[in-house]
Image 1 (cartoon, helix red, strand yellow):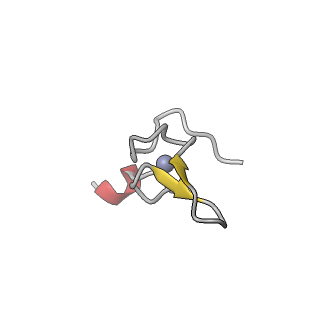
Image 2: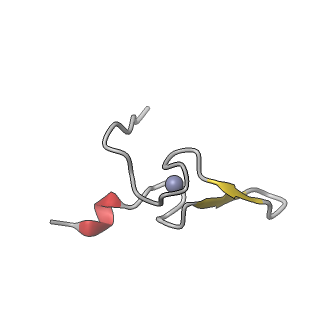
Length: 43
Ligand SMILES: [Zn+2]
């Protein structure tokens, strides 16, 4: 129902992450898809 729930929380659906020095790299949580995996694990 809520489509936003499918967005990767780590990268907010962008598929990219940015570190403190503004390096962009592929999100390791969703592997760049921007969509949260079904087998996500929350710790
Ligand atoms: Zn992601």
